[in-house]
Amino acid sequence: MRCHVKLPVTSMRENRTTSMDKNKPSRLYFIGKKDDLIEAKRTNVTLDGRDILMMYHQRKFYAMDLQCYHAGSSLELGDIEEINNKLCIVCPKHKYKITLAEGEGLYKGTNPADEVPTPQWFSKGIKQRVHKVTEVDEDIFVTLSKCPGWVESDYYQTEKGRAELRKAQESEDAEADVNADEDV
Ligand code: FES
Image 1 (cartoon, rainbow, N blue to C red):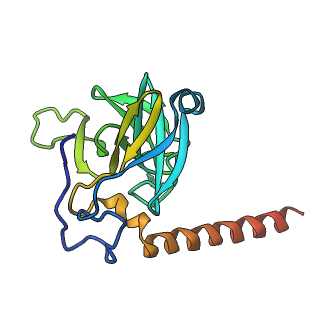
Image 2: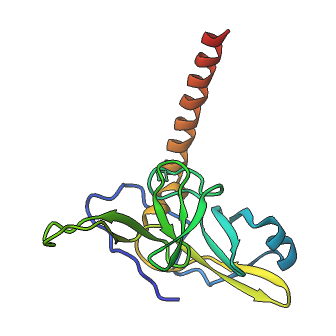
């Protein structure tokens, strides 16, 4: 698989320590039996401290970081759609589209230079880290991506990113409690 990784730019978030250590030897992580994973369709696993979503769609397995690069929502319940001949998962939170095979962010826009600007799909580049899936004798394995550089979804695999998600969850829970009290 080709590595499509944007090099770090100054606007990217701090605290880039992730479990992606390019010096570590690649390892195959056993995920499960093929039939079980096909039946489950979606499976969450944590490998070497990294949260991964495994998906089975149209007779193929995919693996990518579980938390969406945009704001860390879980992609587990995202619909899968074909956009521009690419299968994409649609994040349930704000509907960002991410290609399953490459982790590329897609968006719809118009080119103002066109005589008649017509909405079309554009690429934001690779935003979500995807991982390699291997099948050996009905067993399914994942090898974590070693693509160098920073991919935006890496942020939610860091301590800082996880703490941010916990805080957001706590405030959502507190808001839900207040609303529940008001309904009484
Ligand atoms: S968190 Fe996924 S689109 Fe915003």
